[in-house]
Length: 309
Image 1: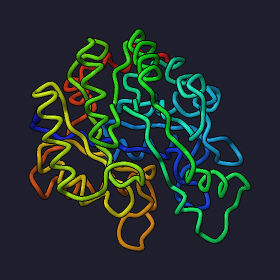
Image 2 (image 1 turned 30 degrees about the horizontal axis):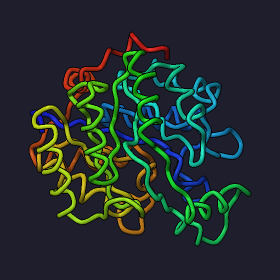
Image 3 (image 1 turned 90 degrees about the vertical axis):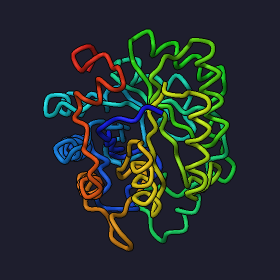
């Protein structure tokens, strides 16, 4: 693993997992996504991980027109690296999932590194939902496979690499690291690899510290000094896990896509509040924060001026 003198903070602004009824602070309009992204960047996030939402309902969408409502606003208002999802909304086709990243050609796009059972149905137990799509969207995940076959990954990395886009390789289990090594061995992806290890999603690796150590040790064997480790964890595990990852020499991801809370029983009022909290923790640990340009240099991105945003 490459250890940098500075920690990259990523912030996942809205995602496709949580629904509007889960928190009044989750941004689900273009204006809300843009403002919270800008505030997160001002708070210290070097990378902004972005999904789009359907105006009026907050339903996840990969409609290019929806992205166009907020991407230029964010681009013009900060210098953070913009990272567009290819995971998109649950159950979307590959054409839908790749549409925005292919159109806007961002510096970074997310890339899930394997298929697995992805179960977020527990959130459907809450009482009231504001929109008809929310409860069925959550409940269907008891019988849902998040599909990322070798053919799908090959298509995605080929198409996006042609634009000069680099990747946040999202690894929900140890096998996903081996899948990444397979594509690296074939020369289809180039180092340094930005490996986002994900803990606490039902169907993926569990949120125990020993699992983080195992993921890091496995990535060290497979990639040596050719990768940067980053950590995210779902729900209440977010801050303990990302802090541990930073202590181990890695980078961190926070944001309302991954966790709606700031502390026990306390809804986070914004993405920026989560960025501010992890920044305080890292500063207390004497771990300095990377600027967007420092993150660009670390990850070898093509620069903000070379995208289609």
